Image 1 (cartoon, rainbow, N blue to C red):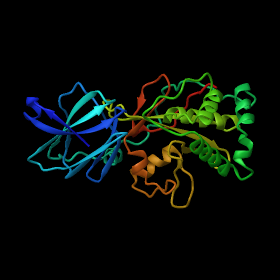
Image 2: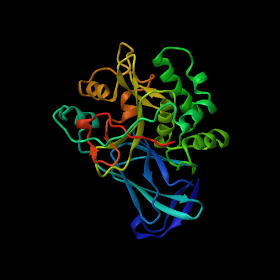
Image 3: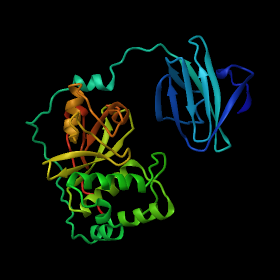
Length: 318
């Protein structure tokens, strides 16, 4: 770890600061026992950029380095993140007594039920047929019939999920490579080991499902808080044997079940969260995957808050 000599008044005159390195502007933070992935953006222009915490221990993780502080409420902790070897971001950790704010789950549990009288028009769209030229090429070239196998419908749906998750790596901090079609993108990612964000990954799985004749939609999840610019994309695919839509998440290789092992839809997941019933997500916890803070947004329309969560679809072109 490096050290830097600083004379900025705001950071305490003539103080030698610890330095950590980074190439990416995105930083993970472990705040007490809570790990916050991609929660901090390095801003060299801020002097200092202040992170407030009520935890006793805080760790910053860059793509190259890390630094940990034991937090005393009476002290401030200053350090530098050296971005790309040239830009110094003066950073400060400052204790702030925590005011109790309702958790995302508490907010959801106090939300209204579905309004089935809502008759707002949903953007019209169509599913591409299996004989679409682009979909047929995806099905043939990537051998999707072999990947799905000969099991029942649910096992085939999950086989495609696992294949996309394991074949195309996810990295939410980077843009997807330029591509001319979903087929072209899949080729690039597989041959050159390129990464994609969650939205692009959901678009790939969406087209794989459509290529195999399943009705599938990409669902964009947005926080209810309009000032929070985080987001996540998943899929919802229709099972004819179960007669329902299923929650499918290619980024986390996840699907949601109840205690009987029955797969759940987005609406059912919301209902069970509200009712505080058990959920099983491929041996992951519901709070770790969902964060309980998202709403849905349909294409070319306004956000739908988590208190009115519903499955909204959009067409993804090959």
